[in-house]
Image 1 (tube, helix red, strand yellow):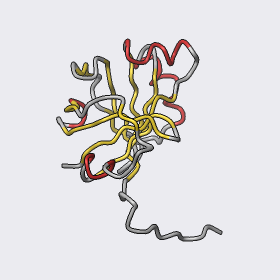
Image 2 (cartoon, one colour):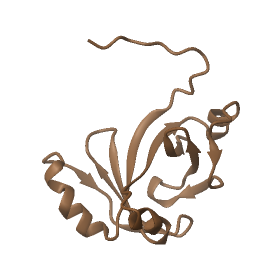
Image 3 (tube, helix red, strand yellow):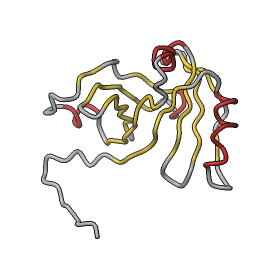
Image 4 (cartoon, helix red, strand yellow):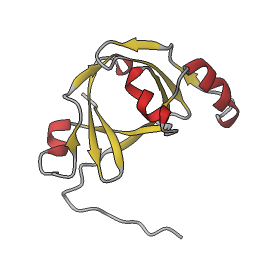
Length: 138
């Protein structure tokens, strides 16, 4: 049995969006993991994001959770160390508001527009649970 927990007003009310997987080749990785996926999925085209300097594909595994496949120089160091789980992403109303009183989120990048997410703003942070991407909902 799971106990329901209600957080206090310091919660930023973030919503899980996706897990980012580092890979050498998006097509090959997709073909290796597709047996794990639901029978019906939606997937984006593979795109190159100039701001992120990597190739990306988003795979919908249900109405609100996704897997993002990432390839390119940005993930090569992770792949060389056999680390494939690159980051987790959470949606927040405002990145600035989400981090304003949180000194455990250390910025890795500046806020940038993300082509994969219709030019919505994203920012990456080192956190106590690894690298986190915050995706601004507006």
